[in-house]
Image 1 (cartoon, helix red, strand yellow):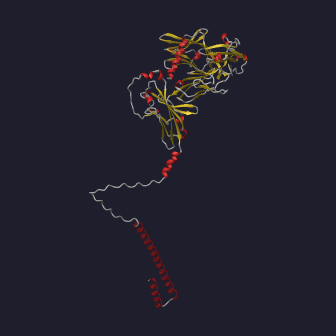
Image 2: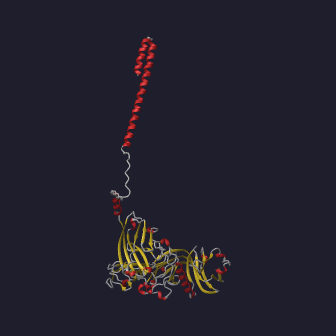
Length: 564
């Protein structure tokens, strides 16, 4: 889609160039930069440099074997970045490259486009600078001369084409008579105070600081880019505030579907903030379907741009989750409503998440390539069957307000949808083309919002606490179910089993016997040692004293009695 739009824009520029005047259009580049010499829609492009001797061919796509001039060797190449369009690129620009150039576009051996340019090569380029709007009216445009003495300034204005409107080398007044009443010149031409009329078309300005014939620097000056379009969904009966900050001294107003609003007096339930500062917000109370449409805030220029969609049905629900949940499902409850009878298959569902005053789009059933916010990436999916929003591994930070908006989708379903963006829970495969009913093309149904649901997703810590309390409560043992009696088969008598108490008693007796045996063995060993000791002592005494045999016999008898 983006490539198609770029092609359309380029084609429009080529058509404009076909009827371009002979005055060369200026191109401003810094030293060492590169230049794309336009694009041609056709089969051939040729670029020439105009010299005192005539035209000098730099390159032609159909004759690419012809070498460029020596000063351009190694710096010329052809490009076809956009399909079907040809271009010629010059790299590493030099001061000597300044001058007139001619670009020709050919198709089927016929030249169908011709453009002339004058290329300025400057020392450097300053960054983009915003126009300074003055309170009440007018604006100041200042060119950075970079302290260059004896410098002159060339001023160019770009609305649809770039045109020179002032050259201080020639005069300190505008070159066009119709601009003289709109411009006040100060600072030797480097400072311009211009009226709102001069900048109401949001032009860009180029200032070139010249020293003789050499460009020293250039800068682009302009108003900020037009505001981004904001889409807001609300329901019938609700209130809404469209914010806008303006200069209270300028001509301010709101352009709405019900007419212009520029006062704090209520008109069609619409009125402006009464504060005297820059707040110029539009308040709309008790919305009706008539309030749907485009809302633009102007302060001389377009400041804010809104599209308000008022949905007829509203539901509100609350979903609780805890850290133990593996996923949370936010349902969009619209399928069973009578308003969607016969229209569900043509519905397009959008899921938003509120972030302060902004509604951030996180899922679109008609655009599976949409990238969710960073914190939800790889964790959010859309159910195809029920258009529910599924968030896996929910976190406490996911808490907030989520909006489900249901529109009628008049576009044909794109082929090759990204399966990863959806939860494949329907398993349907309908390839047959069904002719759309006549009502879907009626104006009353075009871009209509039919349903809006507000879901408050809340993290509830008590859910985990309750679960833990339940787990810690002792559960009563379930009573055994009575067995059915079998009349024909008598119930067998239970076999007698040894009592479990006898096992530890047996173990105790064995241990006691082992202890007693050990003690008896120790006593026996001690007795033997005593006998041996006494016998040895007796022999020793006999040997020393030389006792009689009778005495020895008596000692033997005593020893034997001791042993016994």
